[in-house]
Image 1 (cartoon, one colour):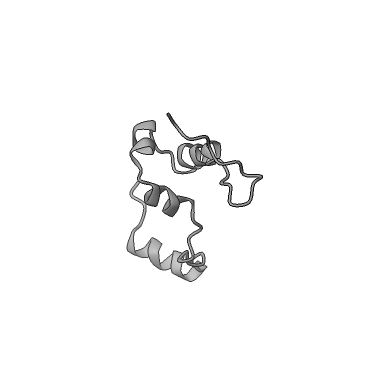
Image 2 (cartoon, rainbow, N blue to C red):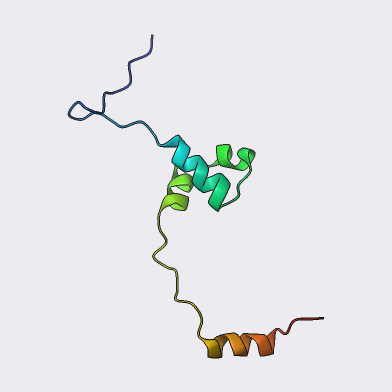
Length: 75
């Protein structure tokens, strides 16, 4: 016998997991395969969904020019 899911409208009730949003993020944004999505641990899924605070600002024009000098396109 299984217990009924908690009612989110009750105090202490839990909301259903947002599977649609999780799948849209992983399949759309991160382009994961279904195999890779379902292999994620809850901790890995949470890390993907969390906004990254370590993102740096876009490189300056000078930095881009320096990178182009270091790594020119080969044509």
